[in-house]
Length: 274
Image (cartoon, rainbow, N blue to C red; front, side, top):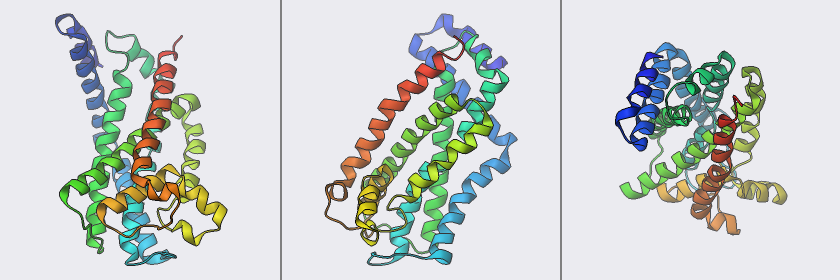
């Protein structure tokens, strides 16, 4: 708490953007410090996507409607699913702070009102970068390869993180709506149908036509398709508008979600103690 208070008392000597940045960094350090106190949770968060990748790659198999090596199709899909999964820890942290009155105490301090949410989001994005690096390394170890240049590679990573940023603000908003850790479990379950109703692990062409249409318009399918194109990996095929404009939708969907849920989360946060 003293670190937070110290950041707030310094507000008399700097600009407002500087205050906001300092407060946000203080909140980010607070979240990062929690990693050291909960190492098991951090490790589980990194290992779970790897287990999913190995399970689908070696145990369950798949690849109906896919030409080429299934791993080249699967790994970009699992990278996309990793950006949607793992929000539970963020949501639980928000609800715990709400339940213990921590956020109310922060709001009573002379600090930027949005620093708590910014710090939480920055810490989550840093963890997402680490998770992506681990998954890419494991994918490479099992035989997956990308075939584009460094620019295309960084573009693919950028689209993955953009999706994560959008999912993060959905999670933060829903966590404040839920308010209790036990309700977060029910909300988290909703992520699974969204993840599996995508082209992450199977081609829409191998599904019934009505289901394939739903899958093609899933935001996760857009990101997975665009990432495969940038990596030079085999795609899901299809000649629908959604399939042929995956890169456009991979930007449009997350931006639209952020435009909706970011202001909702900020509004909800500001109204918590009113």
